[in-house]
Image (cartoon, rainbow, N blue to C red):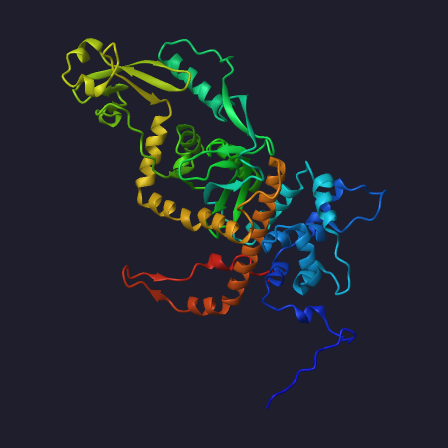
Amino acid sequence: MLKKLTPATPEKIEQISLDALVPQNHLVRKIAKVIDFEFIREAVAPLYCPNNGRPAEDPVRLFKIMLLGYLFGIPSERRLVQEIQVNLAYRWFLGMGLTEKVIDASTLSQNCRRRFNDSEIYQQIFDNIVEQAIAKGLISGRVLYTDSTHLKANANKGKARNEQRIVEPSQYVDALNQAINEERELNGKKPLKPSTVEKYKDVKVSTTDPDSGFMHREGKPKGFFYLDHRTVDGKHNLITDTYVTAGNVHDSQPYMARLKRQLERFGFNPVGVGLDAGYFTAPICHLLLAEQIYPVLGYRRASHGANPIRKKQFIYNSQTDTYTCPNGKSLIYKTTSREGYRHYHSDAATCKVYPLLSQCTQSKNTQKVITRHIWEAYKEKANEIRLSQWGKKVYARRKETVDRSFADAKQHHGHRYARFRGRAQVQMQCLLAATAQNIKKIAIKLFLLHFFRPFFNLFNKIQIKNPVYGLNKKINPELYRGLSSI
């Protein structure tokens, strides 16, 4: 039997609860149940005048509005306001009534530009969410994975100029200089004086966004980009740090400073770190092992020169501090350069009569020179760790942790493009995106653990026999940590 529906009239008045209109399994309900946002009010108090001016928008609601945009991939502030106007779940999350007026989009943008600009509030919010995850047992800090991804800058690559800029020294130059002078003194040579020569290089600079960097890497897009250097905890893939640099900054440069910040800020005591081949440098290996942290780094194939006889065919003897060539002759240590490389020289008279001299060196004085970084032993130790069974398991987890975190950010949280111009503004974007990802993962993870807890309790009463090793195993009790508050 056909039935004709009678459409509701606009003037019809109904009495209904907003809470009843929001599904019980909606993401905003899960977030509201496990995340405390009240700390924001105290954090932003110094940025407001206590006794003058018009009444301000509630800062907790203001930041929850911004987080909604990153949670659901809404890049435009105007569109975000329009979505809040009609979306009942968003209104419920913000504590707004059905008839309450939504703030203007300019309120969001002007607060970001004026009140919160040049402040640490975004970093404080991100850090507090990480601390909440630690308190709930979702972050262990035992194995940390770090990588970088590029965000296309809001700049046309055709609008640029070339500038001569000073080459900034490496982040590890002080530790390296100290090690070089200790090495030289040990070998009876004078320490090197600090270099006062300023080096310049020709850099392509955007006229639209000068803070961005022109990236030209193999297998990467070409243009002006920013790099988001992100660290993810290996337990439940929660983000513990995010830091923005220009697109032409090497991945290894900010790494140790950001790692030390996490150790000091959150009290992490990591056993190891998982990094790709871009971080496989002598300073990184040395500084990590000095902190008793095992580096698990990707393999980087050594570049080959024009000589058929390669460096790997020369055997290093640590006892005598010499190299032995394929002809059985020794290369003796001569000096340590300012760049941190030991130089080992062969005997020119012996090499001159060597039948394969042309395949070994193109030197006019018929002398072969091999260089070895003063921290090369730490790179060799890192290679041993990578090839161990533990190292292979740790490195295999990279694609499931930091790589997956970036994929989720790009697919669902608008992380392919920089929404703003200027490094500080892009840093704000990355912090808010990482915060949104963390609160989503915390909410979903605790919801699932809470939902399946009766099943875990049942399984824990049954001893499961491992058919291979004949061991009795139970489900890890750490899964229950942090559930008492639900």
